[in-house]
Structure formats: C-alpha cells, structure tokens
Image (tube, rainbow, N blue to C red):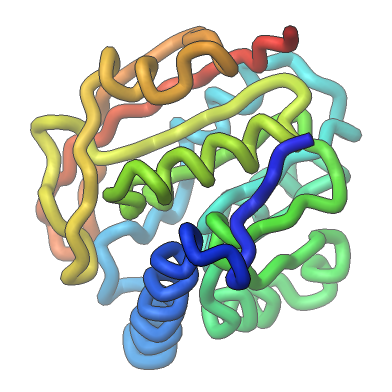
Length: 222
C-alpha cells in the first residue's frame, strides 16, 4: 500500500509547509484576479479534450482534473456527456467560482479542495488530467509524492501539460520546473508508459505565448 505524506512524519513537514504557502498564494490569486487577468485561462481546452477523447473510454469513465480551479474543462466534459468528473484544486475560492459559473451543473461534479501532495484518494480514476499544476512541484520530495498518489488511484491513463524547456520559468510569480519530453517520461517511468507527446503555444489573455509540453501515459500494472 502506498504511504502518503502525513504532517506527523518529520520527513514530510517540508511538504506540509510548502502546501500551506501555496494555498495562501492561490487563495489570494483567485480572490483578487479575474479569468482575463491570469495567463492560464482557456475558453476551449482543445488539447486536453483531444487527449481525453483519444482514449476512447465510455462516458462513465472516472476523470479527475488536478489543479482544475475554475478551468472550463469540466464544463466541456459535461457537454460531451461524461458523467463521472472530479475537480481537485488547492484553492477553495477557485472552486467556488467554478461552481457559480456552472450553476445547477455543478452538482454533477465532485469537488475536492486539497493540495495534490496531500490528496488521499477515496476512488480510482480512468483518467488523471493535469494542465499546469505538476510543473509547480519543484523538489524531488514533491514530485515523488505526486507520482505515488497518482500510482495509487489511476487505473488507465494520465495526461500532463507542463511548460516546456522553451516555455516560461515562472508562473503567477512562482518558480516552475520546465520539462522536455524525455525528462517528463523519466519522471513517470516504471509506473506509466508514454503514449504521445506534443508541444504547443498557448496564447494568454494578454496576447503573450507560453510553450507547453503535453504528454499522455498509460498506467503500467505489475
């Protein structure tokens, strides 16, 4: 059984401290900025939808969006008929905004307020989707914890979008970890096998570009 980080374990106090700092940061961001004022806003998350649909899963497949915040991915997944959607974000304010936008449809989604490195899954998922959350994990401890948690609850596929080695080195004032295709594959090797990778430019609401690496992976079971 995978052991997740606990506050009582001295080796994980650093993770807890980082999670607390991140939560304060993101609650402030979502309390003070509107979607047109943050770089990650997408009206249509076309690449994410394309990857998810490429798996040819039934509409009952369990999909979790890590760091989903007030992303519109959940809106589009519902519109396409997916029935088992979970959104996890560290910011309660971000999730409140998403719920308000979705109205009655918000009740069709499971919402989890948690830092992903402290997430204790109560279900398994056919798809773990993460656009621009993983790259905020910059230490070996954070990355290892994230991967252990994913391994414990992902049945089938993972989609990760990060800044590429040609993308920004910071986001929202925080340091991020850039990835090449080989580097991202190396992080997940042994547990997930690469299916496909692409790079693309994301145009921000302020008409700047950010180069992303998107990769899909298949869960490898022992």
